[in-house]
Amino acid sequence: MTNPVHEIYGNRLRVRACGLCVINKELLLVNHQLLGEEDFWAPPGGGIEFGEQVNQCLIREFQEETGLVIEPKEFLFATEFIDNPLHAIEFFFRVEKTGGTLKKGNDPEMQNQIIRDVKFISWSVLKSWNPKSLHGIFRKVPEPSKIMDLRGYFKL
Image (cartoon, rainbow, N blue to C red; front, side, top):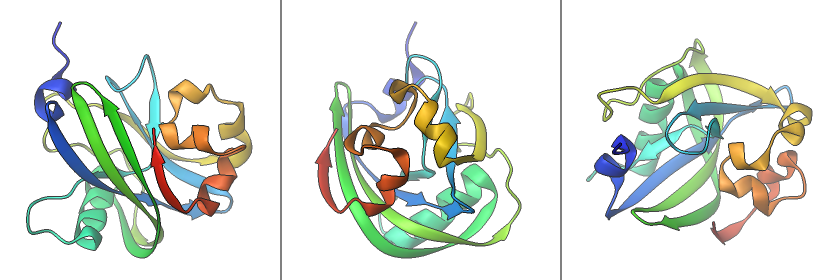
């Protein structure tokens, strides 16, 4: 069976903007299928389109995936992920919610949707999860809440 994620995003460099939105010590995450063994929870974000500014991408992706309106804040860190056929460079920013209502959105590039769920998850709950079900950046910190302290460039 062919993986549609590999078909759409594979064999090319993908540059992504991602946002870390924390409210009441809970981090907003999106659960995607087909990106891991089972569940794969990652901060909202997506591919920067040609001619699109990073801030515009963040605002668009949050609206599409979560229904939330956000304001991008400071740049935190970057990651690079290579696992043939996927290659992504991701820029992570702190974002603040300014409006909207949280809801499961969609990925317009995917004919069959891969977003399973979207929700705010407490640091203590995240700490108990299998690291394989979380974005690789969580393996770079001793506990999930420390993700907000990361600065620099990380190979995943």
